[in-house]
Amino acid sequence: MSRIKAAFFSIGLVLGIGFALFLFGTLISRVAHAADSYHIIDLNELTLDYRNFAVLNPNARNMLIYPEPPKEGINVGMKVDVLTYLYWDSQIEALTTDAQYRAIGLETRLGVRVSHYLEIGYLHHSQHLIDRDHAYMNKYPVEDSIQVKLYLYRAKGEREPLF
Image: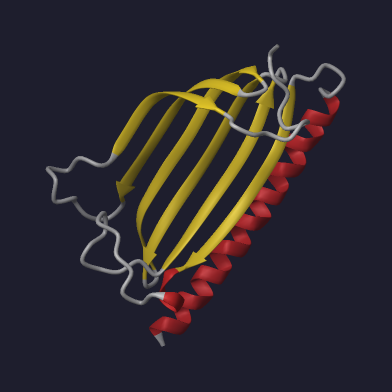
């Protein structure tokens, strides 16, 4: 009975998040459309990604929630351009074991498109446990870095550069 509840919980959560993203995307697209003549904000992507680890590999491992194997994951992502040459890409990720969420994380990139082939930015990636302490002295994986991205190939029309 608990697996049926877990399945309905996951389906309900995915549908609820999807509906909330739809409303958020509609609002942002209206703001972006109103600001389009000034090219202030462009919403390029708003995504909801559901993953099921148990189907292909029931013995999947994630060191953050070990020894329990991850069952499902949900990622919510967006890509926004500001003034055509600044970008903000963000993703929230969550992992479950059975019907309980164990970990949640955030990955954010902020940057400037210097040319069609060069971007310079800031990257933050963190992961946090929700209901228990991590074995490594209650500290969680956190990455903050400066990123220089050189595109070896990029189709024209992909995110306009500053120059």
